[in-house]
Amino acid sequence: MHAGKKRTGGWASLMPLLLLAALLAGCSGSGSAQGVSEDGKLLVTATTGMIADAAAEIGGEFVEVTTLMGPGVDPHLFKASQGDIRKLDRAKVVFYGGLHLEGNMERILEKMALRKTVVAVTDHMPRERLIGTENSEEFDPHVWFDVDLWTVAAEHMRDTLIAADPANEAAYREQGERYVRELEQLDAYVKQRMLEIPEEGRVLVTAHDAFGYFGQAYGVEVVGLQGISTAAEFGARDVSTLRDYLVERNIKAVFVESSLPARSMEAIVAGAARQGHEVRIGGELFSDAMGEPGTPEGTYIGMIRHNADTIAEALK
Ligand SMILES: [Zn+2]
Figure 1 (cartoon, rainbow, N blue to C red):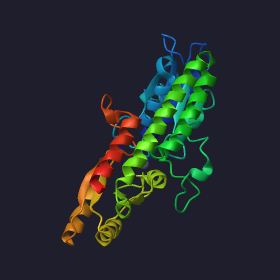
Figure 2 (cartoon, rainbow, N blue to C red; figure 1 turned 60 degrees about the horizontal axis):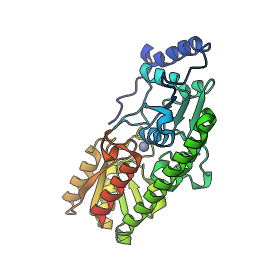
Figure 3 (spheres, rainbow, N blue to C red; figure 1 turned 90 degrees about the horizontal axis):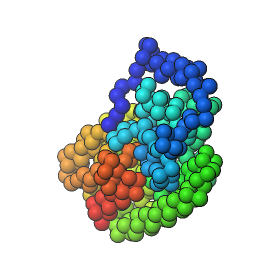
Figure 4 (cartoon, rainbow, N blue to C red; figure 1 turned 180 degrees about the horizontal axis):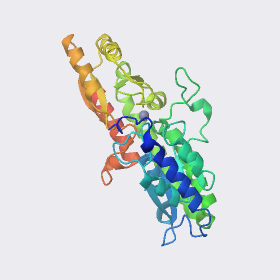
């Protein structure tokens, strides 16, 4: 779901900054208990669910993790509310994606970094494994779809928790190692599922270019309708280009995403049908947000498994 139209100008757009200034002025004299819960847990705030999930797995019982963006929330458009700024403010450690994933939160995160640990989980990823974007020097931020690359984020988070709370180093090491092993198994699982699809059919067509890392890691050609960020515009010409591509390549299924409206993909399916080519919606993929808490897809591992299963079943 999109976060709605951007507000331009007006007092509403200044509110987060004014509030931030007030918080910065008011909190400088806090005591040593800042950043720790009443029952002694390290307070961690994460932007996306995928990051929060890793923090909770690695931190276990020694951390209390708060997530800013729930199911269906689009990080590219997300703007921090006053409540969100409070969640950032009370934390001892803030984890975010970086690489401009949280495009509207950068100033707030920069200010927070002046007085607490604020870490982009992509910081230690080897630059040569990152995917560049067209027309700019920026990198594609959707790194969590390369599970092996995501282990680098998990290790960076583990080291950050150890530095913030050295008394529990042994637990963070043990839990971090267990989680990385689970990610390695997940990586192998996704590889195996993609091999079930005939090589010429390994084409993933989705509405926005969230799956570049998935394609790179698992040998799947990825075709998107929109640019890297959902904030980019797309128009009728993109729709017809993609429709022609589907007809030409004889692609059987396209996929919709949990954090984007299905409208554009439905238009392409209808357009292909008018040209006598049957394309179906192969299912819903999780892209920039996980599923509902308490469901298998409400975890990072469950979300990736769901995507791999959905793609394999529709294309094999
Ligand atoms: Zn995205």
